[in-house]
Length: 292
Image (cartoon, rainbow, N blue to C red):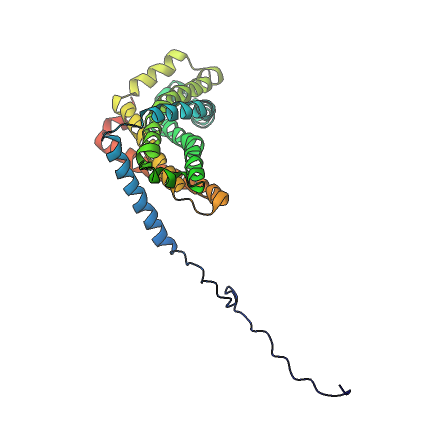
């Protein structure tokens, strides 16, 4: 080739727009649903799962009984110590020391026992109980079901003719509902113990004065409402965590993402339901709001 001969221009490579792959024959990526629509789909799925779990729990065969016992013991073993530590120090710190400071200034430290009826039984003991069960027991349930989903064990159960809701969801649904209510009684006792540690050794109140004002303001609707509320907390946690675990996508990374989402959704559900339940109970039983 002689020097100075012009070369034919080379056509530039086709440019692809950002976010779009070159046309190599691959199918276009699947678009995700918009966030509001995805949230509505999740809520509908959780409601359907709740109905299926309730219907399956009361209809034979009751093949979930053995798994129910195992899950109940597992949740109790994992949640008891974190719950005791949490409510004991929270009761000593927030309502105990801070509430004691206010009553000490007013010269009515003995009234701190009356304050703990509202603080322990009605509010922070059920709330911390729900947080601990969701953070410890709920995450374990979600991770277990998510791993089963990734390993296709749930599909294998359906191939074998077994109902995953009856086999896996129902025992965890009932175990979380029962254990959360039982753990609430433990939370009330140790939350009250934290308040006693603040009132008697710190502010110089007497045990008789602390418990006298506590019992004079204690009502049975407070206790029954607290137990019912926390039992429903457990059912909310169970439905959210089982639903997220059974709908995992994306392998091990998807399992971790589902666990994180399950905890966040469970917390939001507990907070919203706690507000509605407490407002309804105070309206139905106005005597629970009186201080004697």
